[in-house]
Image (cartoon, rainbow, N blue to C red; front, side, top):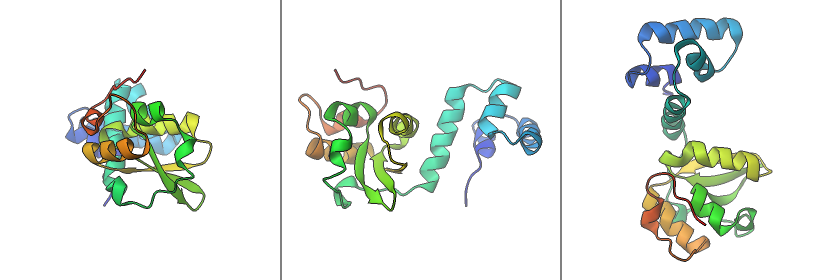
Length: 159
């Protein structure tokens, strides 16, 4: 069962149930994304929308161990080592016309934005535990000074 963005925002205390219903009402007449309307109508911060969206997406997508996945070596050159570590993004393979890539739940939004400007092909993300992704990045995109533990959290900047 899919948890709706508005329900997540209510559960987190960002919106009240009455506000959620108001956004749904506007959404039916304006055909705009829920998050956009919640921001405009009730001042919900974009970061709060992004966090709820990441939680929603993580609940829908597959959770994988990237080292147990079939990784096509031909997709690895789509990004460089710095980008892989900075955006916590590991291309796995093409599934039909879409590139399947792996990231962590905490980095879903950032990885998706990165894919939007860097990856030419349509892309979808699967999720791994930070240490598992870190081990895979060490194997496929080794970079001096990096370790699997460095994938946990956000904001890792690589020179």
